[in-house]
Length: 268
Image: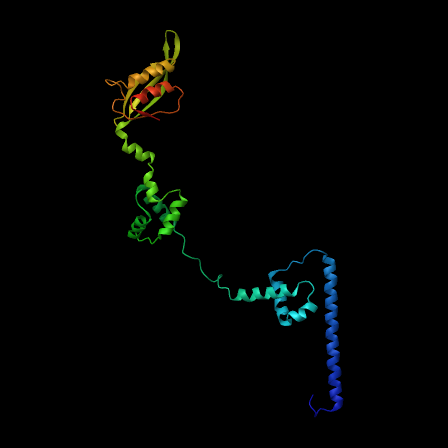
């Protein structure tokens, strides 16, 4: 205090300061006791804080410092309070929320175009597709093209070249392909209504249909004979064919399939 201040005033100021300090200690003691009562009511349950509550406590805790917090803090440890403050500061300098998204997603039309190019041109790799897209004014990276193809179950160009689609197989072997199937008709005879099974063979290149056989009850022996007839080297309807397509009708017996296979025709 200033030496010019009267002693009576100095004594008054010291007394006032002591009284204020005592009041502050009494307030702090009350708040600490109040916190203890609240903790006793909570029991073993941990208090839940909102983000706003954490922020408010963290700001006040940083002002007091760790040393004072050890004596004052009761519902949250000093380490936790200071950790909240560090995250609060770090969040202020975090620019991730202000950053826009990365590379924009590829439009659905361009994705469909990538798949169409890969399917129609199995020899085109990622770079070739990228160039074709650039000619159409679409800037797409090779990585994006690879990702789109993987999402649609399409391999890279070398792997796609190893595989033959059903449509490509048909176009390549159209002239040596034939198909066989049954149809039935109901006919009135002197013995009444009877059902006939007719086996026909169609040349896929010319669409020519030939009836290979008609029977009321096709059996294994009859089907074996039909196999020999259609593969006859002189007038069999499968002359010059390499592949015969049929369904899973049980009438197509193994004996018949073996007979046709012996003539060099692949049956499937």
